Image 1 (cartoon, rainbow, N blue to C red):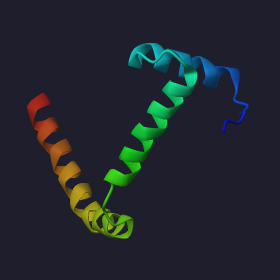
Image 2: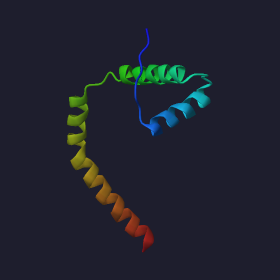
Image 3: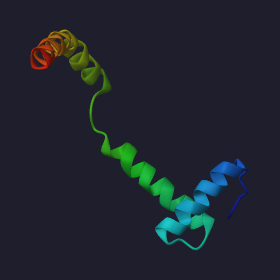
Amino acid sequence: MSTTIRIMKRDKERLEVLAKKSGKKKLTEALRFAMDAAEREVEGFRGNPAAIEEALRAAAPIAKRTSERVDEELVKTIE
């Protein structure tokens, strides 16, 4: 069973480029290829977004202090 989808002209052009780069003869093959790649990318992320956000929040003060010290060291090299 098949169906028709409407996409913007620019997206169709991008799909045509992807088809050429991936060696696909039909746009449907290129679309299937893109969806497979996207699914692998999404499924590959096994992290916990909340834990990442918490770690970044905890690291922010350290990063600020470190960046301030880097600036001081750069000033020393310029003088």
